[in-house]
Image 1 (cartoon, rainbow, N blue to C red):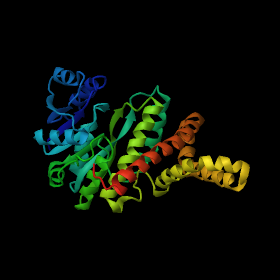
Image 2 (image 1 turned 90 degrees about the vertical axis):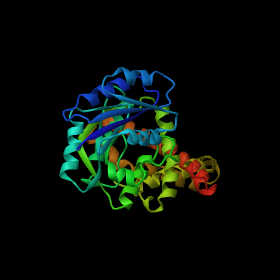
Image 3 (image 1 turned 180 degrees about the horizontal axis):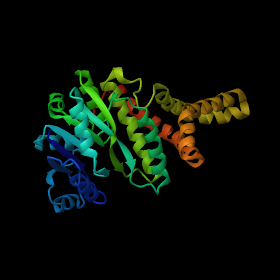
Image 4 (image 1 turned 30 degrees about the horizontal axis):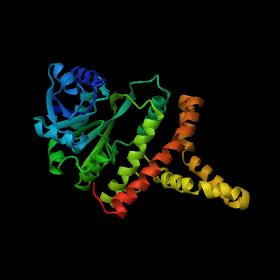
Length: 329
């Protein structure tokens, strides 16, 4: 089984070399490693070309979905293994992927998990702690895979046309591909031992902007896949409900504050609603407290409320753009 590693790259000089060196130093060697420079404006291509044993392809900026598809077009292996330029695969990463696809011949794709590359950041540590809990809940067969750490059998990937390039940024393009693979009868697997270290966000505002984008593109995803809007193994339906609930609360905050003086009952309805929004995340917060301590639990409780708001306003924009105006990109 020949594994072609494909890495989309855009303005990533700070992390790319470490990623490539990790890909080259695998216990099970890659058949080839392909970097697709997606129209970078920094020295990304120079960095990739300076690492011996890497094939470098350049294209006009078109987004990670298009870059991964371009990498697949260039690849000669029978499995496309994908990670991101800010990820550092563990030495046994490809070996774990190879073993999963060898043992489970009916799997059309297999994904793995994150570990943290920047543990000194409080925000990154919170993000990683939540990922740890969620990924441990996964069964061996899953209903979606993230493109940061995933392998697709060539035949299955090509049969559904690869990634949908109408998702122009890192958003829900990996969910979309997973759903289309499943819709053709494909089985998706998960291997918790296939790990890549990731540089999680360290700035709260930048993280919330990203979450706004996730909410926005989710509305396109649910328009494209109407039967998938009830959550998945990563996030339950109740957790998804907390997002539009947060939007409702933000819309009501001004009348609720006014009602504090004129009709207190409306104010207290609002406060109960705010409590219920937080309660949705209580189980996760409690688990994080048990495993990572009070500080992580407390910070997560604060972060997740703001994250709900960011995703909610992104969803509101997406509803207008994709559903009310009927646009597709």
